[in-house]
Image 1 (cartoon, helix red, strand yellow):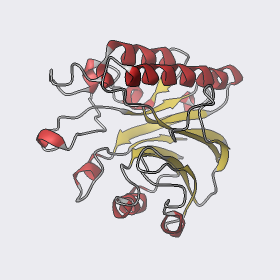
Image 2 (cartoon, rainbow, N blue to C red; image 1 turned 90 degrees about the vertical axis):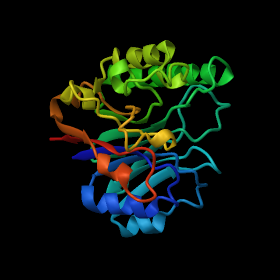
Image 3 (cartoon, rainbow, N blue to C red; image 1 turned 60 degrees about the vertical axis):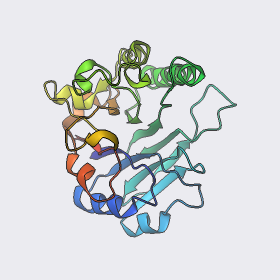
Image 4 (cartoon, rainbow, N blue to C red; image 1 turned 60 degrees about the horizontal axis):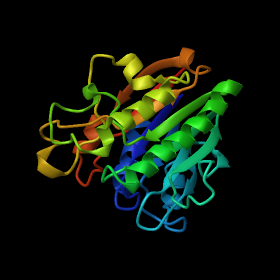
Length: 256
């Protein structure tokens, strides 16, 4: 069973790229982020034609998350992260697919920091940890997939000082991610690739893709119930180099 996460950065603009990747990679489950489309604008017809069922929560202009399942219909569990009834942003969706629970997470960026946006990021992380702890307690097979907008360690960003003030690599951001992992989650990519950077994001600016000036922001975290089933994991880097590509590449894992 192949599970992937992909920040598509505008699902309609990148639809040809997405469909090409689905055909080539054949993931069984895909968590998408940054749809940048309303619910009505989500390209469900094209996705169904490609052989995928879907659940999604859109938002005009920004955000938006979805879960796709190959030759199956994902069963929607929730379309918002618990803990803040006033949160109207489309950043979390959760579904059951083939006996496991999969999320699509689009964690707030947090810039500029310090400030209210960074405070929102940390508060969102706290809510995510509270929700994730319930999965651990109940021993549910879960993949927490998504764009966490955190490069967890200095190894997860190319050698540079240019991001030093960015919310993606602040000590508090990294500590929030580490606190989540410490609940008992396994970072699938890092588990199988401890000595490779495994970047998933290359900014459009400053020639960062050709220079391989990347960051690892997209993560697949496995609950203890799934860790023994982890076989392979990787990043489809070549997708980032295509014409009209997202600034992210898909990260994926295979469960036996």
